[in-house]
Image (cartoon, rainbow, N blue to C red; front, side, top):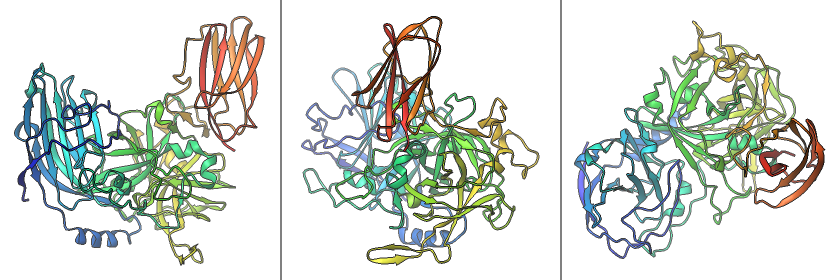
Length: 590
């Protein structure tokens, strides 16, 4: 492969016009920028230019792949590299002994770039930043907390065909202790429209016209619409996934899922076929990316809106999967992973509840997913058939349904199917065009894939179709580690209750709030050694007090809190006993 080196002259008048934080990082700004955002170290910066893959050929391949029943939905193409901190870039020494290392990577014509590392290790105190060609998008700071030692790592996509790398190195750090090796650069051409907010041609130039968020059919429904507003828990549990498959980066959907210990282990359920055939190694999974809250803020998208910030986590470990020897033969279709990091509480992520009973869902059944690498979408139906299968490999292994609103596409694979109680019952395997079903918009009528098969959670629980059976071939060992035998489980907030909103410990007793989520009436269960004066308050997420209940001489028991007049959404319940207070987050679904 041809790699050409170039030098970029960074003009001293360039400005830092935007700032974005995603992934679990520390924030801050690179040292190469002054307080007023001006570039303060103008000099030639060594760069590496890589060739753009043949995009016409890639799109022809994609059109063929997507005709397959389990076709991989490709969002990016890898360009193999051998870029090392020790042999590339330039180091600038500052007056106080600190150092700045910088390098630029360019692939002309690329819509967005992502870096993949087979070695990533930073000493304590070193900060790593990445930013696009005009400085409007900034990722980082990444620190020693992101170290992966012998496993790989990856960073979120950077807009445009240029990515700038910068290390801020304290004076006392030995440069020999820094290990950064980039073995692949991904050219992303799908799932990149949200990055257009960072695009300009030059400082002070007119911002490039924003593209509508796309990649999926116009018949898809934004997740915030319709019933999606009634199920914020399931919506927040839905995650977009980027994974390496050979020399490609593919897109799928997954669902954060609860276990009976309710210990907030960050399990994620997706489809086995998303990872292709063969075994899954933790080394390969260390470069998978998981995007949270990637959705539009309103139902009817307009170019004036931007989707909610897409937070991301890098890396997972393998727990279990169904057998997959070929992409045409599959009985069940599940892959259970554990993320290397748990979503922080400010992301407002839930771990979904589930129903493994195998009872056919009735009433409103719905799915959240990321079709075509797009922002989160919603599909609904009222009819689910229990006798589905994939290529008739195993009878009754899948739920079969036709969505009445929305549908699924490439990228939806692995997305969750929820029953009318909001519990997860399966994950998406395949889509088909149902006879007689079309989608009509004001200007046209479309046929699109609104028929779907979802691999049953009940079948994947024991998964007897793979012998010898073990914890690596079934779900029950992970989702019911204490072998309780329960058929259903409710969701839980990702930090596990109690929430971290406390001003003092509640030494006088223990408080739980249930059911959560609720349709309007909740109960505070308190356990006290002796009667205490209790005050229960309901706060909005902005801290405004909406309701207060005073209970003199409260004793152990359940106390009703009626929130039927409150709108659907998230609230904080504070429980005061004397001088101490604890707080719980609850979600209303109406």
